[in-house]
Amino acid sequence: TGRFYVEVLDEDGQAIPGFSAADAVRYDNVNELRLRPAWGDNSDVAQLRGSNVRLKFYLHNARLYSFQMLKE
Image (cartoon, rainbow, N blue to C red):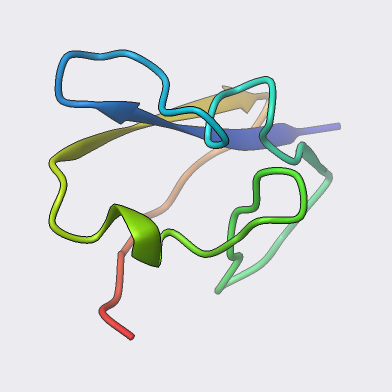
């Protein structure tokens, strides 16, 4: 089965506390059009607004079609 999770990094490539790969919720065998990643109980990246971040996608036997970050 496929596996997917996301890590949020700062502009220097370091994991942001609370948004690291270790904190990321792993999704197995998912086929979602609008999947909202989460880290522990947190799925709100609004606290990172105004910061330059990098997203690191971890995919195992999976494909990522596209991604989008929305202002809410």
